[in-house]
Image (tube, rainbow, N blue to C red):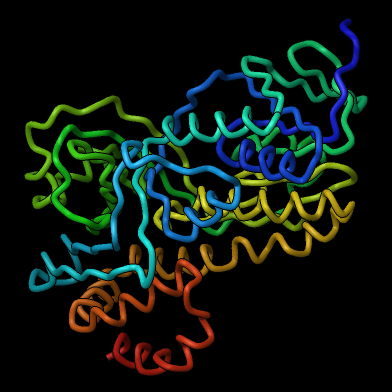
Length: 377
């Protein structure tokens, strides 16, 4: 067997969360190895939109996306294709981010930028190197025994590190199925559009001057993007005849774990918990956790990360609960979208809460009771 390879931190999983963690740690002076069985650029089914708070976290990591990498957008637009009654079909409401902009970028382009930044700051990347987690505690990277001070599991929803470290205890409150395709069509809106129907949602992200990404989320694992588009005539007409790329699929969950650290092992990204993909915050949560974990590891305070971790998921999971209620109850969705259509400033403020620009307590004090009354009647 080959000789040990030593580092302060070994990150298992070279996706966005793993690379962000490696960058954050390296910027703090730690020696870091990232290991992944795949080779860049690594793609995955996702909505491919980065909200303003996620862009701010990327900037802290020194990752700057180029204008040519994708497309900026200024807000979120809801389109209701099928509610409790025919009179609600086609209702549209739009909200704008209170400051800054969001950005649509293909997943493989984002991965490339993160990998470039990791190389620039001195992260050692072991691409195409499967990681073996042995029962005796040894970890092999590409067949070589790895020595490390800390191990970070950034290996996604089905994390092997999580099981190996004994961190599987948790709660799953939702599970749905997502599919994504790219369409060669000029974006028709300066917003991400979320189209609602009886069976799920489709969200459309501008990715460039002549491309959009369409991701759908459904409750039935047998459905695909084309099935849901049949319930969304407005969106189907926009995409009709456009050249489309391959369809990718993934499971999306709202899930929390009791602990995200054990000994010298920590979890980040989807390995550590998640919110339903409709929130658009999956990538941003991973970036935030990377920054928090880096600070705690450098201070030698892994328990501090365990204490601070729940806050990184709190708002996305709250939003997931609200949006999943709208998914399950058409009458509630009708009232909510009609209300936001009548009061666009309210939608703006909700987006401000979602991206961290306004504390939720201030919003609830100002509008909470009135909004609940309006939704109830």
